[in-house]
Length: 112
Length: 111
Image (cartoon, rainbow over all chains, first blue to last red; front, side, top):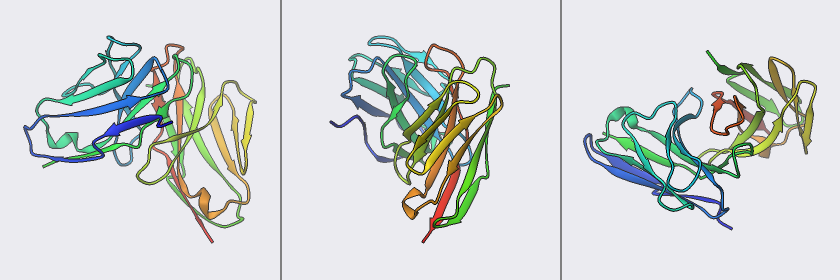
């Protein structure tokens, strides 16, 4: 049972390049989330989804887009990467809206 | 503004030396306080949820408690394998996506 899987684990981009982070969960969870984690700060919510075909903005959505075409997958896109987007990105899922979050292992992104 | 703070930022203990980590919050409409453990290079792993003042939860050497303004994570006789960053998070409503995370306390337990 893999839980929440994120790919890629590491990526280096140049300013202006685009990329997509993929999150896959095998727990049949309805809710999925993308967070970013920066030194000295708590995890901050970028976007989330409460079900297949739905997405919503979180606390820091600017510069990111997401899609949830299949229940088990949640994609995070950067259309034109900026150095301020250098961070560790975590995907999480939960069963309904009241349970704990299950996190992936993270994707470390560096934008030069 | 809703806020979660954690103290200390970092803590070094000798093996067997008990201590407590603090999570203070100013959140309207608390719908649960969560503790997570995060190992280097890994994602956070769920430990406890507390819902009301006075509630306590235990797991091995860890015990979490909750008051109206803060939560404590007590670590009794810690071992080196307890070394990790401990994150506190509060949920603000019942819709599920509205978590506020603290910055974490980095715990090191020396043998």
